[in-house]
Amino acid sequence: MQSSRPGPVLLILAMAVALFLLMPLIAVVPVSFTPARFLSMPSDTLSLRHYQALIDNPAWAHSILLSLRIGILSSFIATLLATLFGLGIWMYQPRFSALLIGFVLLPLIVPPVVSAMTLYFLMTTLSAFNDWIGYDTWIGVALAHAVMITPFAVVLILVALYQVDRRIDLAARGLGAGLATRAFKVIVPNIKFGIATAALLSFVLSWEEIGVTLFITSVNAITLPRLMWMGLRDNIDPAIAAISVLLIIVTAIILALGMIVGKRRRDVH
Image: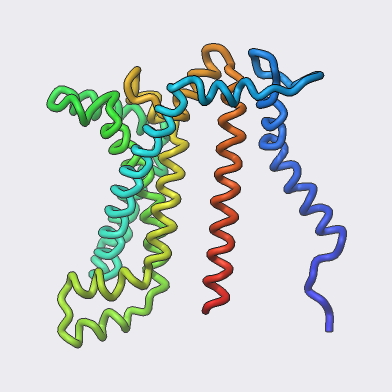
């Protein structure tokens, strides 16, 4: 019986491609230990001064907490809207469902700068009516992020829904279950992992969003990506490399935990 395992040549090629893709991430690690006041590779000595700067400068902690708040709120809004929209499309199957889905996915097609300008005018208009939900407010940024990330959540929710057997909905309806019961006690439990994935992806997309944020913020709502961008634009602060290393470590831990949970889930099933 012929083995389906890849040969050594393919393994070496795959490792070379993986190393090539990881090089930008690997390169930032030694830069974060430079003793210089600008981005450079360390020559003779290593220093933790830029990691210490992350602790000493309250702006970094404030921007991280702000990004967390914005990411949590925007991902909640995006996931909720995507779930409700997906349930409506899946349960009712309207005649113009393809048109509705295409309309929801428009932010994926429109150039980001156009979306950013549109949201800028929207937020400045909202500021005229309310100071805490418009331009340069964290709630306003969360709403703008929700607009941009909802299409991604919709795609994941629809993929999860189209894997659900419609007969369970028909059986629930035949037993007299109402709309809310069918939706939230029958269908939603079957797509809970899709909803969790959509929420996680939405949070990550909001966490790293910079294009729209630059247009709708000024001095009050300084998210972590915006603060990093300001550091690169103004003085190329090496603390950016330090925070990048920390973010890489956190991301690697989250991915590892996700793989472990996924493996245990597959073993259970």
